[in-house]
Image 1 (cartoon, rainbow, N blue to C red):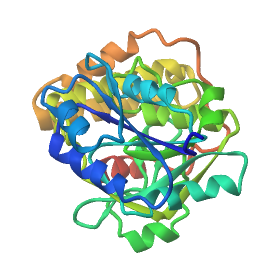
Image 2 (image 1 turned 180 degrees about the vertical axis):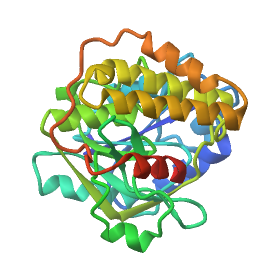
Image 3 (image 1 turned 180 degrees about the horizontal axis):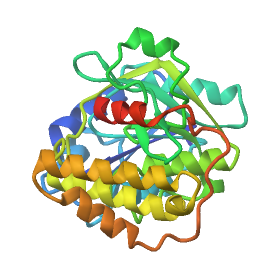
Image 4 (image 1 turned 135 degrees about the horizontal axis):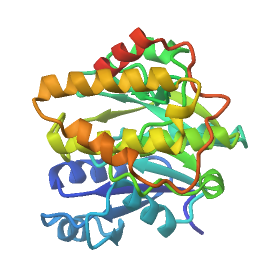
Length: 310
């Protein structure tokens, strides 16, 4: 019988992180299958995985196809009822999978679940994602203490972050795969929006905790990172028709301010060029904004505070 949980781990090099991630997964108390998707790692990751972790299933992409494409390949390769997408820079305690997937047995309409991710210093990295009316996504409760996060009810939870999240396979089959037009960043936000628009619920599971080392592949605030993030933002603005929607003016002003601030701090136009490219993209159809999950109480000032906290 297939394991009820498929853990999909996309990787692009970084063997030390991958080894730690797989070692932690080996100690999980819940039955699961690990599917590692290699985006043509420039090091000897594949050989090391085959030698040290023979039980791990490998999907070799042959090229660096991006995060969304790698996740989709791993999802297609498995058959578990619950899918956990896990970055290789996340270290999971032995009870993570058991805690994170437990709510699915109690609610047949639960489509996703978000764990409490902590930074190495113990502060909260995220308890899922939240977003404002412009569909700008934020790491929910980033920078707060774990005790506060466990009790928090706002900002409203939209869905899991891409670093670690559990999904019901039937929900993913219903809304379609991750958007492969996005190479990296915000594909988790887009998936959360589509799941909520389709009526699937989500849950925060603060008892499920893991450590997220963060920005391990391309480096925090590198030009490449900001270019990819900019493309994703521009792509979603076009995909959801935000500039022609009711919050269109706020969306435009927020993006202008964000781009100006990034250009001043970084002294380049990587984020601007990324957004421009994303706005020229051709999404396959107009996506609907969900009736639930968007936190309409997040004002402009709080949105920028959330952006800085991440």
